View: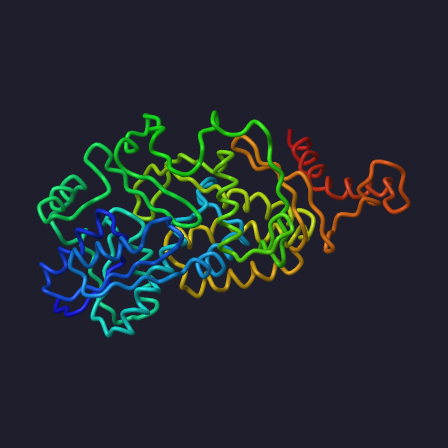
Length: 401
C-alpha cells in the first residue's frame, strides 16, 4: 500500500503508541495522531507531547464530550439499549464518533489513509472500519494487528521498551482499558480466566460496596422528550449532567458489571465494566416511561431494542437501518417528559417516584377504592373473550381423547 499520510486514532496507550512508531517505520509515512476527548479523565496535553515524542507530525485533539453525550449516548438511552441483558454499550457507542473524527481530519489534511489500534479478534475493528467506509468510501485503512508479527501485548511491551516508548501497563497487569464519560471497560490479563474474580485494585471509578455510604442519596431527574435535562432542579448540559451522575453513582458503588459476552466475530469474551451515571439514567428513563408511554408503543419499542443494541455493538451506527429505527424510537419519546425520583444506595439505583404533565396514570381509575369510572363487571366478558381460544383447544382435545 502506497501511503503518504495517515490519521491514527491515538489514545496514548500501549497499542496506539506502538502503532504510531510502527506506521512510520513500515510505510515511511507522515502520521497525524487524532485524540478524541470523550471525557476519559486524562491529561490530554501529556498525550499530545507523547504523540510528538513518538513520531507524530501533527496532533489533533477534538473536544467531543458534549457531542458524544447529546448525539450518541442520549439517543441510545432513549432506546434503553442493553446488549445481552447487561452491557450498556459504552465502548461500542464511542467508536463511530472517534472514527468520524478521524475521517473529518483525514479530509481536512488530505490524508491517504486512517488507522486504528483494534485487534483482529475484537469488535472495534468492525466498528471503526464500517464508519470509515460509510463516511468516505475510498479511504485506505491500515489495521496493524492484522498485519504485523507483534501478536501479544507482552510483545508490544518489549517493542515499546526497545524504542523508548513509555507505556501505562506492565506484564504483571496487562489490562486493556477504555474510558469515556459513560464507562470504563477492562479486558485481558487475569480476566481471561473466567473462574477467577476480578482484582479489587483494578477498579478506578466505582467504590466497592463495603466502602459506600450507609445512608441513601435521593435524586430527581427531569426529562424532556426522552432526554434528561436537569438534576435536582438544576439544568445542566448533557456532558455535565452525566458527569455529575457518574460522581454520585460511583460514590454509591452503582454500575459494576462482570460478563462474558458474544463478540461479533464469533468468540466469547469476558468484559468488566463500570457505568455509574449510565446505570442511573437507564433506571430513571424506564421510570418516566412507565407513566408517559402508551402500552403498545412501549411494547413495539422494546421489541426492536435488542436489534438496535446489536447494531451499536456490531458497529452499524451510520447505516440506514439504524437511522430508521432511531426515528421510530424518537417518535415514541414525544410524551416522555416529567420528573423521576431515585434512591441510590449500596450499588442500587431504584425509582421511588414519578410525575408528569403527560402522565397516562389516572389514580381515579387505578384506585382500589370505590370509583365511578371502571365497572368491574365488564372484566367478565373481557376474560371470557380472551379465554375463548383456550377453551376451544381444550374441548377439541377432550373430544379426541
